[in-house]
Length: 279
Image (cartoon, rainbow, N blue to C red; front, side, top):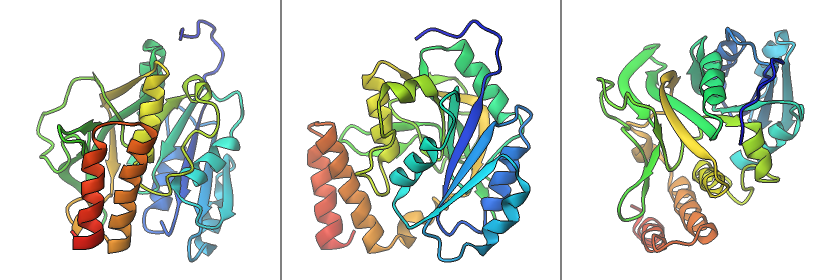
């Protein structure tokens, strides 16, 4: 893992997966194409949206490739988009369609990774955003993912006021999949596919994080990267359907099957509570 010493252009491309993301997708793409450090390409994978005509408005972006398909799940759709990138791409940004990056985000991410050659994946300070009021909600969404003592993975700081905490760069056990700035060399070291296709939704970002760490790469949270995420974490749990809760519980069991750990006890208990008690 050594940094590049030549002066050639450092290429960055982005992949995002859309599923009924009409409310935020235009703003997400607009922010990507307004970067001071231009992206070489953006691949948008529409994964089974119920209506796709609105995607035609994005034909204005000549560096955008849109792929249409059935709802194949977050991991498989991201893998499909990744395979469309040039093999010469130096960095890959996986970003959710409900996330808005500031205009200097990509440039800062490139500089941080070039200065830290052991970093395989980078993320930033994800802050909550209220689309209804069109402004930041003043709360933290994620500053990396950590595991609690009994085995549950949580977004560090989620729901806390954005008031001067988590202001130091830090290596993390895992990073939130809403914004993942990845070194191509690190992804290639995993072989293919990048995201484990067995994960339809939930925990695929943690599984990727664990594999990268096992391959010797570090995962870095850096507070200088500020991005805004529209995820409705305040009401997310209450509004999740029982089917989605069960899917999340199954994904947690799958995670510990692939990365064996005593924490499997927690995963099984969670599944039982969700499956039979509807918690």
